[in-house]
Image 1 (cartoon, rainbow, N blue to C red):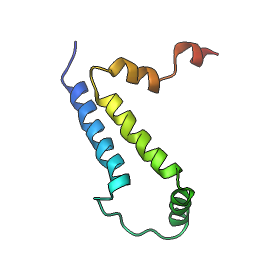
Image 2: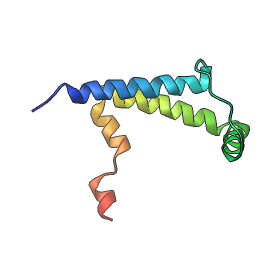
Image 3: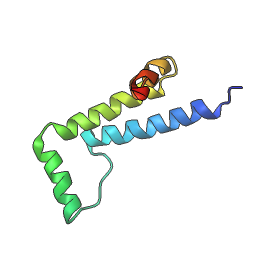
Length: 88
């Protein structure tokens, strides 16, 4: 029996990840100042110049793939290990 909760949860979660993924590029949601080890870690991720944009673009891409009902099978294939990979 199919319920409306699954597609609804998929859309809400997809929109959440999409908004926060775009925030990594556009910075429209202000973040509080950090200090200590978390600040140095995030600073080192940003200083690499490629890892933080790669992380955010992957987040936006996977969000679109997971939220799309038409491409649900492709998203599940990309995000879950296959049975043959689990058993070996």
